[in-house]
Image 1 (cartoon, rainbow, N blue to C red):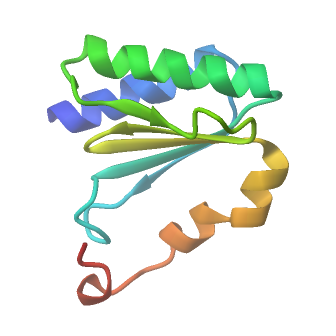
Image 2 (cartoon, helix red, strand yellow):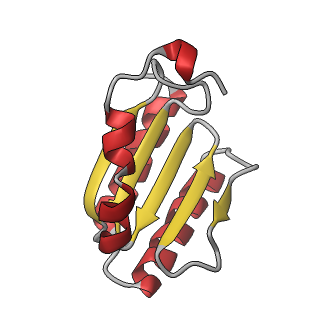
Length: 116
């Protein structure tokens, strides 16, 4: 196992143990150069979403990802935790359904269209 796969498992376990809802992982390695994995989860309230994002940020930092940060600090509906090779979106369920990013990234996208 490589370090990124191990980190993905740690984040998935953290979200699960902290009662995140509908957690999915999407392999981006053949779809985008921005990250290897995208993890998407839902929280039950704005406080839950905030707590989940802080737990994920702490796990990234404890595993050597020093440049990680939380985007969407002012939002009650969505947080993105950028762990470089693993990106984590945590949504309010209604916003998640509205944006449907798992649907977008789960579909096959030709590599030449996604070079970032």
